[in-house]
Image 1: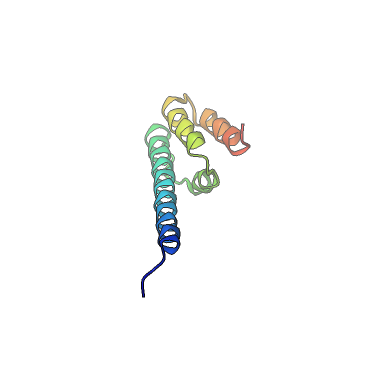
Image 2: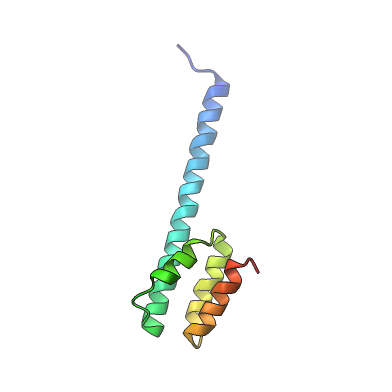
Length: 91
């Protein structure tokens, strides 16, 4: 039995959406890992489960990218935490 072109188009669109969601999730996980690594190197934050859960709650990749920069540039861990709190509240 031959599949209809509409069915084929739905399947292809679903696959494309799945791939895009996978890319987004991978980018989010990578950004979080980079942030935690930077903070650990700069501020010796080896026990960061609280930071991890706070970062995982952020779905906006642009906010996570800003936090990567903030983790790199912050003079003190408290500065980063303020930026994280601001990002979590959508500002």
